[in-house]
Length: 451
Picture (cartoon, rainbow, N blue to C red):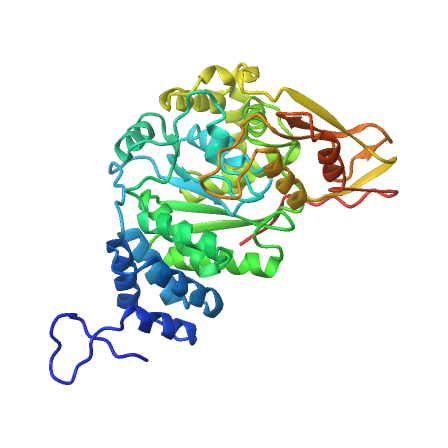
C-alpha cells in the first residue's frame, strides 16, 4: 500500500506525499484498493486538467479488470457527485423519486412512467440519456416530438418540476460533469460494462438531481448489457448498497430483455406507443412493466403503503386521463407540440413501410432483441458514436410477440425506412431475428424478480 498524508504541500519529516496519478493506476492495476481521499484527488485532478485523458483511461481499464470494493465505489460516486452542482428542491415538497433503466431495445417506459407517477402525487425530476449502440435513449424519443427541448438549465428544470411535478431532461454541464467526461472515455476504451463504473455513473447523476428515492430497472437477456442473471443481480445489489451508503434508498426490479419491449423500435414509433399507454391502450407488456415500476416508485416515495394499492392508484390515473394530461403539460412547458397526445399522427413518419413476411406457418418462439436493436441503428434510429445524428422517423414495427401464431406470408412486422433502396437486404436481416417453430413457447413475464 502506498503511504498517504492529508497535505500535499511540504510534508512533515518522515511523512510521504500522496500517491501520484501513476501510483493510483499501478495500485489498481495490481488489484489494490484506493483510499477515498485518493479517489477524490484523482477525480478532482481530472476535472482540473492535471490528470490527462490517457491517464484516466488507463485507470479505468485497470478498474475494469480489477474491480472496486464497496467503499471504493461509494468514494468514486461521491467524487463524481461533488464535481458539480447538487440540486436542492423546496423543503416540505412532495417526495422526489426517479426510475433508471440499464438500457434495452424498445424501452420507451420512461415516457409514460414519469407523467403517470407524477399524476399520483409524487415528484419525478428525471435526468435521462441518449441511445448508444443497440439500446435506445429516452431523450431521442422525446426529441421526436416537434419542439421538445431536453436541454434546460437547472433553474428551468426545477421550475417545471415545482409547477407540474415532472420534467425529463438530459444531463447538464452543471450536474455530475465528471460523469460526462469519464463516460466519454469509457465509451471509446471498452470499459462501459464494469459494475462499479456503472454504479458510480448512475448514482452520481441521480444524487445530483436531489432525489429522495430511486427505482432501478435492471434488464437481463440478449438485448441487455447484462446477458445473464448473476451479473444483473450483482449490478442491482451494488446499486442498492452504494445508494444506502450515500443516503439514497434504491429499490430494483430484474426484468426480461430477451425480446423487444412492446411493438415498436425507433424514436417516433416508440413515442407513439408510450402515448397509447397513457391514453388507455398500448401493448400488454409495455403497460405491465410501466405499472410494475410505477408501483415501486410510489412505495419507494412513501406515498402508498403497498404495491397493490399503488397499482390501483396508477390504473385510475390512466383510466381518468390524468396521466395523459400531465404528459401534455410537460410537453408544452418544454416547448413541445402537446397536440401529439390527442393527435399522434403529428409525430414524424418515415416515407416507406416495408412488410416482413413470415417464411413459414407456426408459432413465434423468439424475437432476438439485440439483432433488431442493431438493425434499428443501421436504419438510422440509433448511433454508434455519441456525435452521430439520428432519424426519428425510422424503425421497426412488430405485429407479433413471442408465442404468437403466424401464417406463412403474413407480416411479422414492418420496417419504416427513409429510403427503399436497400429494403431486400434489410428485410432478410430482420427476418433472421425471428424463430418460428411448430410448438408455442412458454410465456415469459417481463418482471422476473424484485432485487
